[in-house]
Amino acid sequence: MAHIFKFVAATAAVLAFASPAVAQDVSERASAFASQVALSASDTQYARWSDGLCPSVAGLAAADAQTIIDHIARRAHQVGLDVAGAGCSRNLIIIFAPEGRAVAQELVTTRPDLLGFASALDIPPSLRPRLDAFVAQDRPVRYWHLSTTMGADGSSVSDGETRQGRGTRDALAASRGGGSDAVLAGNGLSNVEAMRADGTRFRSATREDITFAVVVVDTRQVAGQPPSAVADYVTMASLVQLDPAADLSSYPSILNLFSGAPGAAQASMTAWDMGYLEGLYRGNNRAAASLRQQRADIARRIQRAVANQ
Image 1 (tube, one colour):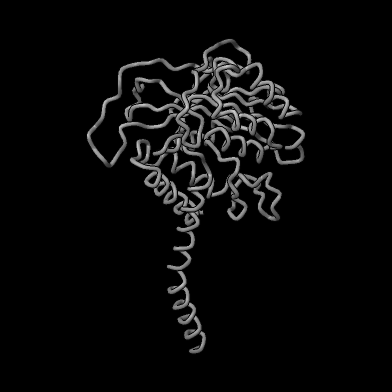
Image 2 (image 1 turned 60 degrees about the vertical axis):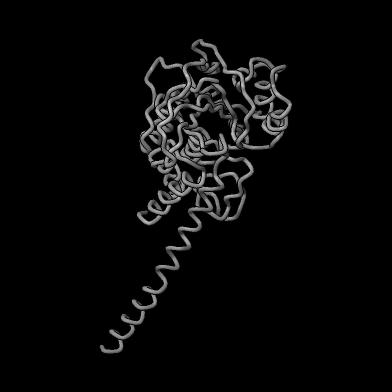
């Protein structure tokens, strides 16, 4: 019996020394994951939706489309994001089609307003490569987000500028439109008074809001995947300005659903994914003073979610 107590004591001692190392490893991995998932809408912040998300789905039977909308709404509510009710003005368009590339090309050619441009002639040369990649990349799910700089309290910034990820400062034309079909233009942005600053260096005087997004799902490429897994992937692609070039294969994430990496695919969102969304939408970073501050807050949420799983 004595040797059993000695073994238990020795094991406890080993775990006591190992725990800080394990915690440090999770902390470092959480920080790395937080820095790789998304594009930055500006030099200081990742963009996120404010309340009033209004999803619309085209290309599926009505019941299946509603299932996707309900799934996104449920995940959004889990992280504190409100979804608008019936009759809202669509600001998230999800298109299911057997030829995702053809749909992306049609958007660029005939509906550039849905991508933030008044016409194809208004697309600035600096954004052409990104649009070309949006069309050409052979991806099961494509996504294009528009974001705009707002005052920290949600007031409009005077220039009404909109952006599409990765820190670009190119102004995009605000899209306008209406109708009941799933493929609709966004609400548009109007120039209002200049923002008010609060005189502190601990938070920014501005924040980055996603104002409109288009997600294109290639039904032939997602065929064979569990519908709930596809819905979770589409949810991440809708709520986050994902970096399509990110390699997340070493992390347990729904974003590996189509990566092809052995053992990397997940059947649903993991603690890492939910931790990221919690950090982006519930964290104390709505008007973070820097990307570093926002990432740190997101990483802490991931670490907590992983520890509690």
